[in-house]
Length: 456
Image 1: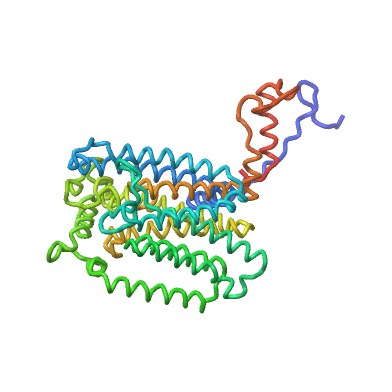
Image 2: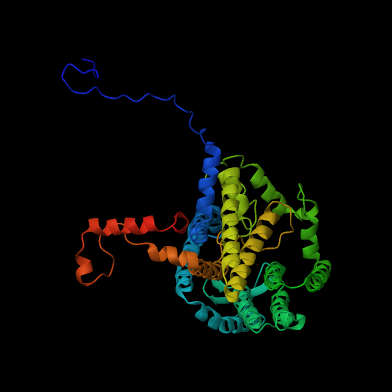
């Protein structure tokens, strides 16, 4: 009898599907492109600016403490002081500055705006006291210091930078709320006269380097306020003319200007500091001579632990060390620009832009002078050079940037979603506090799965 074939066990045969030829899969993704996409996704996350400001400023400060200790030992011993004298003072200033940073980070924006006028009034009062005989102290020919007793001194002009940023940002924000910035007189008055008052008090003491930084902050605020090109060019022309007159009438400033690109100390060793700064960088090579092994700091390079600490860094840590410092400042500057560009609060935009202009301009002027590309202006490298008067207001300004970065809408949402990885939620009460760590982590994973990858 004809029928379907049966197997020996009596069961129907298994129907086997015909295998199709394998189709070629998608080509392997370029690993470089994959890495670029991952870095770009990480770069676009809401907390990127927050992490860059926190990490970059912390690394610059810690590395600066290390280099201050290394660069100042010989100077301290030459003054019959302990080798760690300057390092201890800088560490104390960094500790106080950390407290100021934390306070600024926790303050609401309203309190920052409320502090603008008291800080400006205090800075002006202290800068006037500098010129009072018996109170003001001259250092390296500049009368810009007040003695606090013992070896402690304060430079009020450093706090003038912070005052101009906060007061200028509050002023421009209030004018923008009233839609007054479309009129040139409201954009200039009273911002420019107040800035010129601060500049005049600083220039009476002869500190042109700090005056340049204040001028850069003023231009940064005007640019953020949308000053028209004619107005911007007019203020810039006045500033350039005044700067030319101040340089031309000072033999010391003219001598510094003549040392641009010098490779020899010249007659009377007029370019000694500039040339030995280049020598220090040139002898560092790729990875440097080693931490603490600088030769130029043994009395050859003046101000090795203050204005020219970048040269000692290049000698001891080499090109790798100097490029690392430049990368940290570039990251800090990018983060500040990002905070200023993403906010909708005009005060936050002006204040963040002013702080970024301040730190970036000061770093460029200091490093440019060490490299022989700019005249020696006598300004410290922010967060890096020795000097408590410069470190304290700068760390407060960094606290402002951190507070603004945390207050971004995306960053605020991302921080709110962050919970403890293990254990119950901190401060939980009632039945929710009795949940096991396992169930809490499960809920956390669900919340993580629900959010987009761009909000971590």
